[in-house]
Every structure is written in structure tokens, then in C-alpha cells.
Length: 203
Image (cartoon, rainbow, N blue to C red; front, side, top):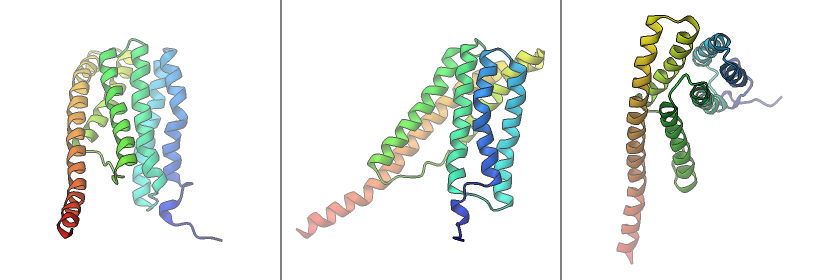
């Protein structure tokens, strides 16, 4: 039997928890559109638990894989962007907030694809502000669903606060991401410019 390196394994328990979020996504979106917010809330809770477990188990059991490293952020982005879109369609989130979230994600994806195709850059690790932005977006979705399902002043003010904090972090993280990409490109071009100068000096 051929040995499969740990980094190349796909069928692992952590990856199964990641794929669970992808499988639950259509059901969550359908529940939101059908205004079955209680079901959507519970399934979002399952997604939150699976998100914790896939990272925890991958570290504890040393089952980190390239597949999981790619799938995990994709699953998170799909979940967040889709939920913001459907909640806007259900009139639970303002369209301008959802528009900012979707525009940022689309801009990051397009930028990453262009850089992969035109440069040697292959890794785009999230910044601290970007990670905070993801956490706040997820908390905003939970706050909206909790407010709709349970109706309380605490959930309402929690929801309102996060609806203002989310766009602020979206713009801050977007600007930081653009700045980091500019710095990466400048560092990559510098060795090429030095190489051209050396070649010109030899002529």
C-alpha cells in the first residue's frame, strides 16, 4: 500500500467537519429565505462548533492537510458572504452593509487570482484586522438571528452595534489588505530590478 503523506490526506475527521459547513450552507440559506430563522440559528450553531473542532482536532491529532488549509477559509467565506446576502434579501440586514461585505470579498478573490497568474505570490495569509473582521461578521449574523428568534433588548443592541462595527472593519481590513499586497509586490519586484541592473552593468 502506498503511503500518503499527512499533508496530502483529504479524508480526515477535521476535514469532515469543514465539509459539514459546506453541506449545511444550502439548508441555512433556504431557512433564511423561508424565514425559518430558528432553524437557521441552530444550524449556524452547528457550523460554529464544527469550525472550532476542525482546527482543534487538526492541531491535536496532527492532521493538518493542504486540502483543509484551502477548504477551511473557502467554507468560511461562502458561509459569511451567502448569509449576508440572504439576510439582506430577507430585509434583516441593510443592503449597503451586505454590499460592502460582498465587495470586499470579491475584491480579495480577484486580486489573489490576478497575483497568482501574474506573479510568484502564492500565499495570502489573513492579517489581524482581517481575522477580527471575520469574527465580527460571524457574530453579526448570530446577533441578527438571535434578535429575530428571541426578541430581547440585549440582542437588539448587540445587533445594532455589530451592524455599525462590521462595515467599519470591512473598510479597515480592505485597506490593510491592499497595503500588504502593495508591500508584497514591491518586495518581489526589488530582486528583479537588482537582477536587471546587474545584467545591464555586465553589458
